[in-house]
Length: 367
Ligand SMILES: *[C@@H]1O[C@H](CO)[C@@H](O)[C@H](O)[C@H]1NC(C)=O
Figure 1 (cartoon, rainbow, N blue to C red):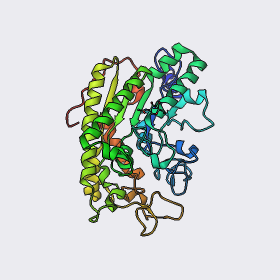
Figure 2 (figure 1 turned 90 degrees about the vertical axis):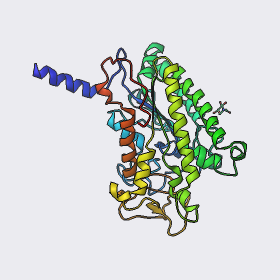
Figure 3 (figure 1 turned 90 degrees about the horizontal axis):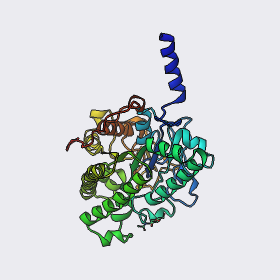
Figure 4 (figure 1 turned 180 degrees about the vertical axis):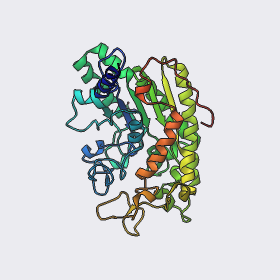
């Protein structure tokens, strides 16, 4: 009896987490920006948003640049790991095949990308959310051809979806006078415009089969080193932070609406704004020594657009909240991921594999 149990456990472990009624695994499809990019921009040769240089990836695997815009893991890496799901490879990786997609899912995230097509234009090349969804549709075609329409539908319905964009729509669009959105909209109407666009995109993903979806909110982006260095005081930019809060509030409402409207949708929203704000204000409480400047910087010259091979690194990377001018360090990402896991209240995929009652939606107002 015990032997059979052990055998069952081994078989389940080897086959991974499978989806009911489908001989396929549960995988993730990730849509995002540089906070979730795992290498797409490496293959956009004209893109100015690049993480393919040292010292990016120094605390990941062999320490070589891997396309992540941080020293270690992204927030989506850590959340996926905690759910027991494989880390999906970058869509543009030329070695990707149908079998790899069926085993691991796909990550479409691209540094500089936004909810809006026009966001991040000065990076020259990046994948906007609309473009990422187009690539997802192309992925679906490939998978349908490989395993047939019926199995493919089960595969895509059983998958987990992550949508994590928005900061570039502010930092690399609305808040920069070179973009026409900055003079076309005001704070409120710009957030409304983002929400209309995001609503259309999330409904489209639902039509394509997305049922379990997590939307990540924004952190206090007025406190990233780049925003601080632009003020004379070095303090956080209050208006930028207010925009993040207003985006989060509107996103939460959007997800509640969509969860009611869309059949079988278990859509969740979560942000780590409050925790990150507390980390920034009280770094020592969380074991950090620095919460206002990048670990990787080029001498006294700031802001540097990215961390470059000639940059110098801080002594202890685990003591810095920010890795470069824009992006949190691996240690900060871990705190953000833990908070989001709490907000999403998803348990490990292998524990929810049994048929479950209708998902409880409605996150608590402060939750
Ligand atoms: C954004 O770009 C995509 C192509 O990637 C296009 O299909 C879509 O219509 C564009 N959206 C808007 C609102 O212009």
